[in-house]
Amino acid sequence: MQDEAALVAALRAGDEAAFRTLIEMYHAMMVRVARMYVSTQAAAEDVAAETWLAVLEGIDRFEGRSSLKTWIFRILTNRAKTRGIREGRSLPFSALEPDEAAVDADRFHGGDHNWPGHWASAPAEFPEERLLAAETRDVIDRTIASLPPTQRAVISLRDIEGWSAEEVCNALTLSETNQRVLLHRARSAVRAALERYLEEK
Amino acid sequence: MTQANTYEELSCIELVELVTDYLEGMLPDELRQRFDDHIAHCTGCRTYLAQMRATIRATGTLTPESLTAEAERTLLEAFRGWRADAP
Image 1 (spheres, rainbow over the protein chains, first blue to last red):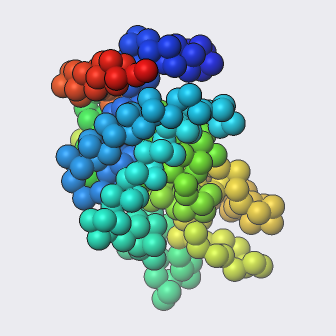
Image 2 (spheres, chains in turn yellow, orange; image 1 turned 180 degrees about the vertical axis):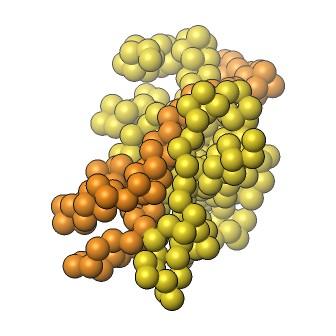
């Protein structure tokens, strides 16, 4: 990671290499985050492109109170929300579905059993050598791509990009609880997909 | 996530909903203790926790999505336009 102050100074001076560095780091992820709020991929790309112009216009006023990354994603999130509202979409977190089980209920004993709620069909350890195979990574990739946009953004930032919980909450203006609920659902879905895939052979 | 009963032993179906809070270090002390007590004697849930850690590790090996050549071209054009207009 480049020194942030140096990047900001270079950007203020109109340095194209600094701008290129920033778009390489963040643009693809910004589109993914914008997609949480707007209904199409094209709209998400528009919002991300507009955000870069707002970043350039506003960089002289950036005071470094938050990280540059957080500042950029805040601008993005605000714009994407505004656009989403204009499209008549409800904000994604008011629409959290109440109960999506991490594991199918039929994997556990029912109420008529001596051990209700305990494993009827216990999980098996994932074979380490297959876990990191290219095919397995494709399964993870496809599963993440099929998640609702909110879960997709959170698991991508946390588990692929390596952001902290706090960074995700700040950049996406999510509460800690919502961030964790979304991460939980996303990780649970990926685990379930891996289990299905790894049990096949 | 699931609000578990405060004195009964956790069941496996409750535990699987607490795994993320556990890994994030966000379980209240008392619930964390019950979580630890449960996995100490439940092989199924220990394996489940190991699967979840393996899932996170494997997801971490994915390559971050990269900038497409088309997006890069468009954004750089916009940048040059902005710079030309700058005072």
